[in-house]
Image (cartoon, rainbow, N blue to C red):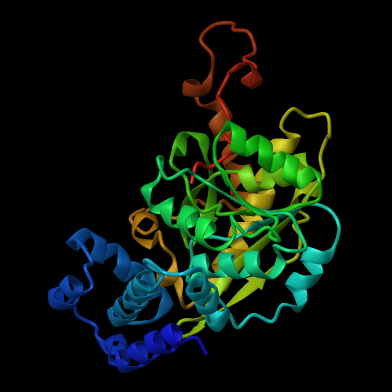
Length: 347
């Protein structure tokens, strides 16, 4: 086993009593450099209650992240690859099948668990046999993404046998991503980021609404590629397995193909199904998701209307004078508005 991985696991084992802590400890937060406010704790508590675990589990996970970050800082190529390999407990039977099947593949994995080490594992395992890219916002847009550029440059960029690449979320990166998929390559995406809610679509997620970008589904549809959800599931101290689903069939929804909204509906259905899969996999360990504080700050659950209740309400809604036009007006074509490119997340 990699010596650095063994050391981190030993430290996490010694710190396992942290998991039993239920009350906030500013001493622990200061030691872990966790700048958490009272409002942050309110949101974290909601996620922990959903998981049925104590606050200490979040502290312990934060400790693991800090130790991994320290292990990667100023690391050598050999150390990064060794740490990833030692932490990876994946049974690759299904992923081997997905990667070896011909045709483009969009593998959508959220910021969950040790997702960075999981991406390193995928690059290391398949980068010599398949063209693989990872798509995310450039560091100048999102400072946190500098670690991706660093690891890629350290481990893969100068490897002549590696067919891996980093594609930043800009016009050039998008063109390269589509070219990669159309040539039968694999694109890793992180679909759980939304910097502009006005360009997003609400999907139900963890009992709340989530502002989801449709980029993963849209890219897969436009390049005739498969869309597959994946996630780095924690299996122990600095140990994970990459779980993958089956290719989405939601983009094959029924309906009039000539409708101007058919593709949009297909992308939305595929995205909603993908997040439903994430929710199922996150059960009991939601606190490992990077964005729990932001997400659980939302108080309103995703609205759910029974079809029969909606049928009763609809005539009343139409009869309400507030929805009646006061004068004749032409039909407004939604497609006439230039809304930019609402489908692609920038992180």
